[in-house]
Image (cartoon, rainbow, N blue to C red; front, side, top):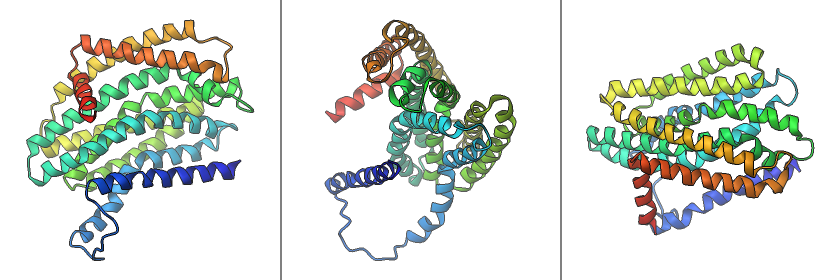
Length: 330
């Protein structure tokens, strides 16, 4: 079984890569065309990729550190953290990383033209948008963490006790979900500015804080303390990066970002309360496996609908931006 799972990951990665080729060809990018081995930009790229990789992979490095610490805790702690992390990666990969990737070419173009005011505006726009999407996802995961974990994982040796311990880890991971996504935006601004040293320094400090907090919190909180340590270290990393970016570019539109994020948080909190009430009605207390799917899907869809209505009532501009983006793709 383990071999098949490993093979599935490899095949999935190959398919993910292969799906890019038709779209690259449509855009006029053909890898079969001959190209010289040495390009004038190769030296600059080669000098940047190591610090860029290190700065981008700080979340994964922190996760490895926590896994090593979790090996000192009771049996099962590593599994609880792993399953909780998988659920956090879903909205992070779909929304946070996708938004950061989409905005990078614009940031790079503006930076190359030294249009720093435009860079600041693009950064503020992307950060407000990613928080608008991530905060309700965070609220939904927190409220529905137990039925989601039961639906996806509770079978065989993964019993109700394992479900509850995984759910508690997911709760503390979710506290940092907004920071996990926001960091990607800030990092891409630095990379568009061709500044790699600052993210590396922030990453080193973040890893040190993660290790220190993990050692402090794993005693009283067990694996939950490790999940909380990662969230707090990520928030710390985001604070360092944002402060450094402000010193580099000047005012970043912090007031507008805070107002938008505050409205999104209020809408997400209200949505979370409504979804929590729905789970008491729609999800059976003793339900397991596929029997939970209709109720979980209904709660998720109604939660999205409620958030959209609240965002519309709060006149959040990010909602209209998303609607316009969807219409352009049709």
